[in-house]
Length: 158
Image (cartoon, rainbow, N blue to C red):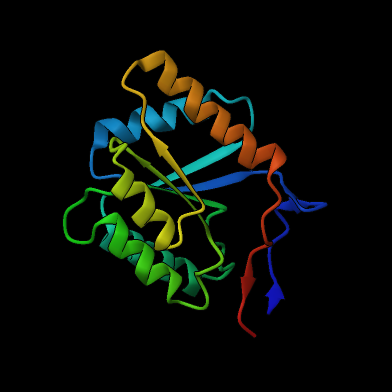
């Protein structure tokens, strides 16, 4: 494996690149706004379902710089390919299985939480209903992954 990305400074990311996988355009925009108010550099790309997200990641792997997102925010209930099936496909791909995935969904059901972790989610966040609390949670999560969490550097198979 070869490290190919210079976005990282001493193991911490200088720009947080996020793939938001969410079928609701309004929820995606709300999440994007919350992340942009965090006070650090963030780029949010949006896929409307798991199929579009897999295609996005495959395209990124074929690109010149082969830059994959630092973080994937994943809804569970989506058309075509739901969040659970997306996780299965992601974790079965040697070039993608290291990516950090945070489930961000309206469901707080114990079964969904357990299934998400069993399929390889790194964290699970049930979206708060109250707008101010939603912004707080998204910003706390963004700050954690931007300035606290140390993730594996982006790699490409040699």
